[in-house]
Structures are given as structure tokens and as C-alpha cells.
Image 1 (cartoon, rainbow, N blue to C red):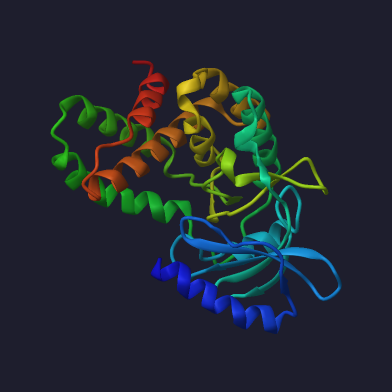
Image 2 (image 1 turned 45 degrees about the horizontal axis):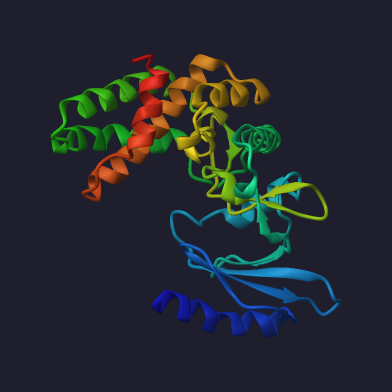
Length: 273
């Protein structure tokens, strides 16, 4: 609540600076507040307020690089505060509302194929550095796990990751493209929002859409669909996806939580257990 109130207070500065009028109640995300606004020329837009941290750093740079191709357009930015003025999309119609999980997966795959075709600009965090830090954190995380099967499973994920770690890639990645981060719009049927950008291999992008609504099944078909649409080598994509499972498991263990059961189930499928 303290962050929410602080970000709302900050909005007054940018409403005045950019000549904006509020239109509707604020929407609160996990780390941001978004205000529907209208510009002086009558254009409907969205004012996104957030702090600059490891997750949000580089968002404006990534949006400028994509230039609206499959992604929400950036209209203005204050890089120092992380404040963004964005094209207004239809927040009432997220892709998460699509009934058919395979159709939703196909939409994400098509969008990922477009955005990961773009080389990452200089200045973003790099997947190679993230992988190196994961290797440093792995021994203590494994030691903290009481369950032998989970420990062996994460060790196997790490072994798969090591097979591809020498070629971490240089594409512009979103890093968090689940169904809730795709919204309907007038300009295109669906557009991507809320990137956590980094430079790396597109295979590292698959997990969020595979994990989303995992209980509805068909994870192997969804994986095959995504690798086909993105034209990825299946074995490399498998290794990067296992690496992504490992990354999330490290976060969970370090916070004192159990690794996510659905992600471990997906890892077992990819490891053919």
C-alpha cells in the first residue's frame, strides 16, 4: 500500500508534465500502477508508474527497439523514474480470457516469433551473465532441499542448461510472456505488454506460456507448437526451458518456499521421466 500511494502521488508530476487528463480508476499490478489517461490531442493512453529495479530496467529501451511491432507502443518516457506513457490497449480483454489453451499458446508463440527476431540493443542484462550467477547459487540451493527427488531433478536441469550455456544468444527477449501479458487492441488483435527485457536465446522464453494454465494439460503439444512456430531447435529449446525451471526453483528455495510443482512436472516431461 505504501508503494501504491507513492506511485499515485508521483503521477501528478507526469499528468502535468505531459498534459494528461485521467480517465477512469487506476489499475494496480505487482510492481506498478497504470492510469488510463487522455492526451491533449484527445489520444487515449496509459500512464505506467513503477520504480526502476532489476525487473523494470530497460523496459523503455526494449519498447523503443520493438517500435510497436507486436508490442504496445511507447509514447513517452522518463527513464530516471521508470515512468512510461503507453498506447492504450483493452485491459478488459487479456489473452488469459481465451477459452482454448492451445489457441492462447499459438498467439503467444506467434508474438514471440516476431519480437525475438529483433537483436537486443546494448545496455540490457544478458542471459549469459544470469546463467553464470545461477551456477554460483546452485550448490547452496541443492543443499537446502530435503527432497532427494527434487534435488536430483534440479541437478538434471542444471546439467541440461550447461549443454547450451556457451551460446546464450543475442535476441531481444521479453522474459515474462504469459497469457496475462497479452492484451487485445484496435491496432492488432493482440499486443504484448510489460517486458522484463534481456538479451538471450529465444528458447528461454517458452516457460511462462507453458506454465500458464498448466492444469489444463497438453504441455508437450504446447511445447511442440511453440518450438515449431518460433523455428527453434527442439533440444536446445528443451535445455533452455529446463534452465528456466531451474532459475525459478532457485528463487523459490532462496525465499524459503518449495519449488513450483507444475514447473517440476514440466521438467519431468522434458527430461522424459
